[in-house]
Amino acid sequence: MSREDQIVYLTENVRCLPDYLVDPGIDLLNRAGETELAISLAKDSGRVDRAVEIAVEEGDFLWAALISKKAGRKEDSERLLKEGLSYYVSNEMYGRAVSAAKALGLPEDQIERLFEAGVRHERRDMDLSRVQYALETVALSLESALIGRDDEMAEGLRDAMGEERSRALGRPSEVQKK
Image (tube, rainbow, N blue to C red; front, side, top):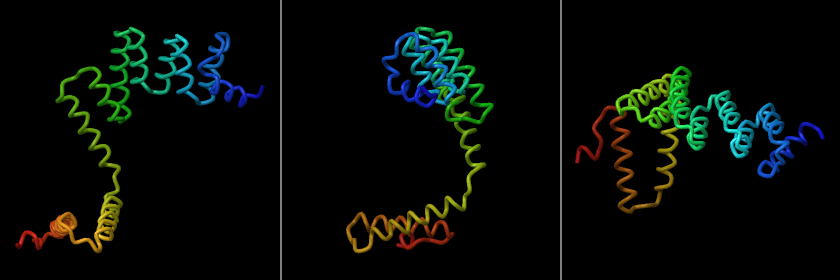
Protein backbone atom coordinates (compact mmCIF):
# COMPACT_ATOMS: atom_id res chain seq x y z
CA MET A 1 0.00 0.00 0.00
CA SER A 2 1.41 3.42 -0.95
CA ARG A 3 1.96 6.10 1.67
CA GLU A 4 -0.99 8.07 0.31
CA ASP A 5 -3.21 4.99 0.48
CA GLN A 6 -2.07 4.40 4.05
CA ILE A 7 -2.98 7.96 5.00
CA VAL A 8 -6.40 7.63 3.34
CA TYR A 9 -6.97 4.30 5.15
CA LEU A 10 -6.01 5.85 8.48
CA THR A 11 -8.20 8.92 8.04
CA GLU A 12 -11.19 6.83 7.00
CA ASN A 13 -10.71 4.28 9.81
CA VAL A 14 -9.30 6.47 12.57
CA ARG A 15 -12.03 5.42 15.04
CA CYS A 16 -11.78 1.66 14.47
CA LEU A 17 -8.10 0.86 13.94
CA PRO A 18 -6.72 -2.34 15.38
CA ASP A 19 -4.42 -1.59 18.32
CA TYR A 20 -1.29 -2.78 16.50
CA LEU A 21 -1.81 -0.05 13.85
CA VAL A 22 -2.40 2.83 16.25
CA ASP A 23 1.23 3.77 17.05
CA PRO A 24 2.48 3.50 13.46
CA GLY A 25 -0.69 5.32 12.36
CA ILE A 26 -0.04 8.20 14.75
CA ASP A 27 3.52 8.51 13.45
CA LEU A 28 2.45 8.32 9.81
CA LEU A 29 -0.30 10.91 10.22
CA ASN A 30 2.02 13.22 12.13
CA ARG A 31 4.78 12.98 9.50
CA ALA A 32 2.19 13.58 6.76
CA GLY A 33 1.18 16.86 8.38
CA GLU A 34 -2.15 15.48 9.58
CA THR A 35 -1.34 16.53 13.13
CA GLU A 36 -4.92 17.07 14.24
CA LEU A 37 -5.82 13.52 13.25
CA ALA A 38 -2.62 12.20 14.83
CA ILE A 39 -3.43 13.98 18.10
CA SER A 40 -7.03 12.76 18.04
CA LEU A 41 -5.96 9.18 17.35
CA ALA A 42 -3.39 9.30 20.16
CA LYS A 43 -5.85 10.86 22.61
CA ASP A 44 -8.76 8.59 21.73
CA SER A 45 -6.58 5.47 22.01
CA GLY A 46 -5.34 6.41 25.49
CA ARG A 47 -1.92 7.60 24.39
CA VAL A 48 -2.25 10.91 26.23
CA ASP A 49 1.50 11.53 26.50
CA ARG A 50 1.91 11.13 22.74
CA ALA A 51 -1.08 13.40 22.03
CA VAL A 52 0.32 16.09 24.32
CA GLU A 53 3.79 15.74 22.80
CA ILE A 54 2.49 16.25 19.26
CA ALA A 55 0.31 19.20 20.28
CA VAL A 56 3.26 20.89 22.02
CA GLU A 57 5.50 20.27 18.99
CA GLU A 58 2.87 22.09 16.93
CA GLY A 59 2.75 24.96 19.42
CA ASP A 60 -0.79 24.12 20.47
CA PHE A 61 -0.34 24.35 24.23
CA LEU A 62 -4.03 25.08 24.77
CA TRP A 63 -5.07 21.76 23.23
CA ALA A 64 -2.25 19.95 25.04
CA ALA A 65 -3.43 21.43 28.34
CA LEU A 66 -7.03 20.45 27.63
CA ILE A 67 -6.01 16.87 26.82
CA SER A 68 -4.03 16.70 30.07
CA LYS A 69 -6.87 18.17 32.08
CA LYS A 70 -9.41 15.72 30.65
CA ALA A 71 -7.01 12.89 31.47
CA GLY A 72 -7.02 14.01 35.11
CA ARG A 73 -3.56 15.55 35.00
CA LYS A 74 -4.34 18.95 36.49
CA GLU A 75 -0.70 19.84 37.35
CA ASP A 76 0.46 18.98 33.83
CA SER A 77 -2.40 21.00 32.39
CA GLU A 78 -1.47 24.06 34.44
CA ARG A 79 2.23 23.68 33.55
CA LEU A 80 1.32 23.47 29.85
CA LEU A 81 -0.84 26.59 30.11
CA LYS A 82 2.05 28.51 31.71
CA GLU A 83 4.48 27.29 29.04
CA GLY A 84 1.91 28.16 26.40
CA LEU A 85 1.40 31.65 27.77
CA SER A 86 5.12 32.28 27.58
CA TYR A 87 5.35 30.76 24.09
CA TYR A 88 2.37 32.71 22.78
CA VAL A 89 3.60 36.04 24.12
CA SER A 90 7.11 35.49 22.74
CA ASN A 91 5.61 34.65 19.33
CA GLU A 92 3.13 37.56 19.46
CA MET A 93 0.12 35.22 19.41
CA TYR A 94 -1.93 37.40 21.74
CA GLY A 95 -5.33 35.82 21.17
CA ARG A 96 -3.99 32.48 22.34
CA ALA A 97 -2.06 34.19 25.15
CA VAL A 98 -5.32 35.73 26.41
CA SER A 99 -6.99 32.30 26.27
CA ALA A 100 -4.15 30.74 28.26
CA ALA A 101 -4.24 33.58 30.79
CA LYS A 102 -8.00 33.15 31.27
CA ALA A 103 -7.61 29.38 31.68
CA LEU A 104 -4.95 30.02 34.32
CA GLY A 105 -7.31 32.39 36.11
CA LEU A 106 -4.94 35.35 35.94
CA PRO A 107 -6.23 38.71 37.19
CA GLU A 108 -8.29 40.76 34.75
CA ASP A 109 -5.71 43.58 34.61
CA GLN A 110 -3.05 41.13 33.34
CA ILE A 111 -5.47 39.70 30.77
CA GLU A 112 -6.38 43.24 29.68
CA ARG A 113 -2.67 44.10 29.21
CA LEU A 114 -2.25 41.03 26.98
CA PHE A 115 -5.32 42.03 24.99
CA GLU A 116 -4.01 45.59 24.56
CA ALA A 117 -0.61 44.26 23.46
CA GLY A 118 -2.43 42.21 20.84
CA VAL A 119 -4.35 45.23 19.59
CA ARG A 120 -1.11 47.25 19.35
CA HIS A 121 0.54 44.38 17.46
CA GLU A 122 -2.35 44.10 15.00
CA ARG A 123 -2.46 47.87 14.49
CA ARG A 124 1.21 47.88 13.59
CA ASP A 125 0.52 45.60 10.61
CA MET A 126 -2.75 47.23 9.58
CA ASP A 127 -3.01 49.07 6.27
CA LEU A 128 -5.36 51.92 7.18
CA SER A 129 -5.94 52.92 3.57
CA ARG A 130 -7.38 49.44 2.87
CA VAL A 131 -9.60 49.70 5.94
CA GLN A 132 -10.85 53.11 4.79
CA TYR A 133 -11.54 51.74 1.30
CA ALA A 134 -13.45 48.78 2.75
CA LEU A 135 -15.56 51.07 4.93
CA GLU A 136 -16.33 53.36 1.99
CA THR A 137 -17.36 50.34 -0.09
CA VAL A 138 -19.71 49.16 2.65
CA ALA A 139 -21.19 52.65 2.93
CA LEU A 140 -21.82 52.81 -0.82
CA SER A 141 -23.44 49.37 -0.74
CA LEU A 142 -25.68 50.47 2.09
CA GLU A 143 -26.63 53.66 0.24
CA SER A 144 -27.51 51.59 -2.82
CA ALA A 145 -29.65 49.27 -0.71
CA LEU A 146 -31.53 52.28 0.68
CA ILE A 147 -32.51 53.66 -2.74
CA GLY A 148 -36.27 53.86 -2.97
CA ARG A 149 -36.79 53.35 0.76
CA ASP A 150 -38.38 56.17 2.73
CA ASP A 151 -39.16 54.46 6.04
CA GLU A 152 -37.87 55.53 9.46
CA MET A 153 -35.02 53.05 9.54
CA ALA A 154 -33.73 54.13 6.12
CA GLU A 155 -33.92 57.77 7.15
CA GLY A 156 -32.08 57.02 10.41
CA LEU A 157 -29.32 55.21 8.53
CA ARG A 158 -28.96 58.05 6.04
CA ASP A 159 -28.71 60.57 8.90
CA ALA A 160 -26.13 58.49 10.75
CA MET A 161 -24.04 58.04 7.61
CA GLY A 162 -24.21 61.76 6.80
CA GLU A 163 -23.21 62.63 10.35
CA GLU A 164 -20.27 60.25 10.22
CA ARG A 165 -19.10 61.66 6.86
CA SER A 166 -19.29 65.19 8.20
CA ARG A 167 -17.38 64.21 11.32
CA ALA A 168 -14.70 62.56 9.16
CA LEU A 169 -14.42 65.73 7.08
CA GLY A 170 -14.39 67.96 10.18
CA ARG A 171 -17.56 69.95 9.54
CA PRO A 172 -20.99 70.02 11.24
CA SER A 173 -23.55 67.64 9.76
CA GLU A 174 -27.06 68.54 8.66
CA VAL A 175 -28.42 66.54 11.62
CA GLN A 176 -26.28 68.56 14.06
CA LYS A 177 -27.46 71.85 12.50
CA LYS A 178 -31.17 71.00 13.02
